[in-house]
Image 1: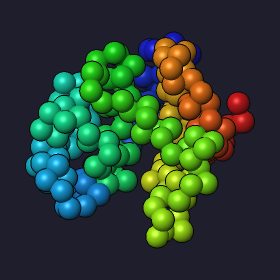
Image 2: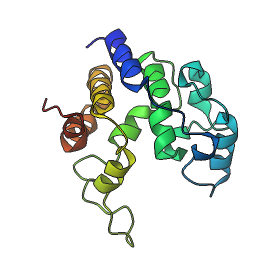
Image 3: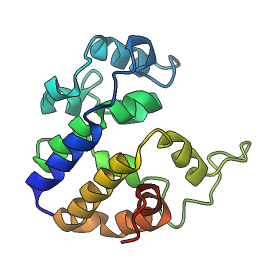
Image 4: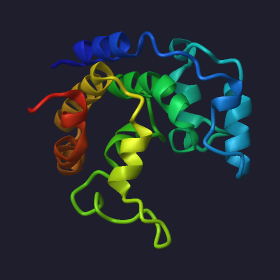
Length: 173
């Protein structure tokens, strides 16, 4: 699938995702970065209006937004990150890692931390539970495109596809 088709699939799949609201943008308020991100995104209820430069640097130049979002905000803003990545417009942020990190073969059965019985696979299933099969399928298309565009991430992407994304999308190849 070419880049234009991948972007069209992403736009279509995520078109109806609703803005989570200003009070549901970040996973917690535990760090300064969470607070900064919530402030920077407050009222930004159209992911299509965000510039690649803005999302690449949020919050406050660190480019760590994807790791700070609530699950609902992640799902809402993800298309902006994926499309900017397909366009080659990101320098700091690597949305592909947020989609395969924890889903590699050596990670899926590992516990998130020693005191918690939850594995990385369970964590990712919870994080992506709100994704429809159409949205998961658009993620699969992006990941397949990324495999071709970036040889260094082929292995982890293939593992994440087999360990989670293909089943979530209702696809088997």
